[in-house]
Image (cartoon, rainbow, N blue to C red):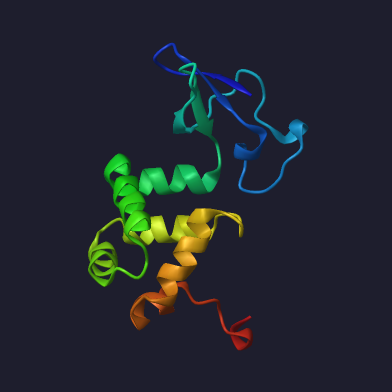
Length: 139
């Protein structure tokens, strides 16, 4: 899917980035529709890679400074979940909740999802409780 950005540039959305769940092409936005997308990066040819996934748009809008937030996330991934000082600093970061929530909704094979699960396993109890699945009795 090609998008024309407000600045006059073009970008594209891969079929896997249209929605958080698999969708058929007839469920994609109509030609000419205004949509909100987030930048995933650029190609070697300079075209913007974009995402319409609600989870991606949600985390970007929840972060005061998305670039800094994802920079923090990537630095933490590079240092590893076992780095207690980096982990504690992340959990005190105001963007930790939206980033961790976003990562936990990624596909199970995603490196971000796997890292978030490892991070959560080492998290303080109060943080684990926020992301715990509901008890069967509550359903």
